[in-house]
Length: 204
Image (cartoon, rainbow, N blue to C red):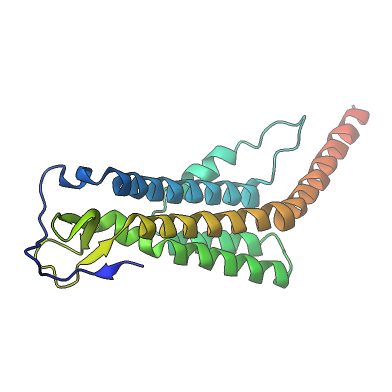
């Protein structure tokens, strides 16, 4: 867990062009956190397209709204709004209350795992070479350092693991509990369409 930065021992926080690159291991982990979150949101866009269009049935044409639904979902930047979109779409699929409740809990867990990502991605990173030669110092801005925190590699790894775990749990639940329901519904829909087409051919 990040710890408060304290002045002393001749140390001090400084910022400057590419200063944070002096901590390549930490900077790599910051990048990994940002990418991991982006991947998690991409997965949510795929979930949304499954709710809206249904899964693609092998041998049948891909639903024309598949990419449109994902792109539309990605236009929403606020995670709470994305979460609301997913839950609304899930409700319209008539999933059981048990499945919906579990889906809601897992979405909330993913949202919670991203709280640190917001601070990491939007904070100001400085250095204190004398006191913390292997760490980065986080501040909300550069106007003051009263809220400064020291991040070690282990802190970044812990936050990265939270996102990976929350996203993985959500994906496993969707694939095992929700996807089969959507697939069965899509297969019934395809059969109905084929029946209508066949009937129309017979009537010609």
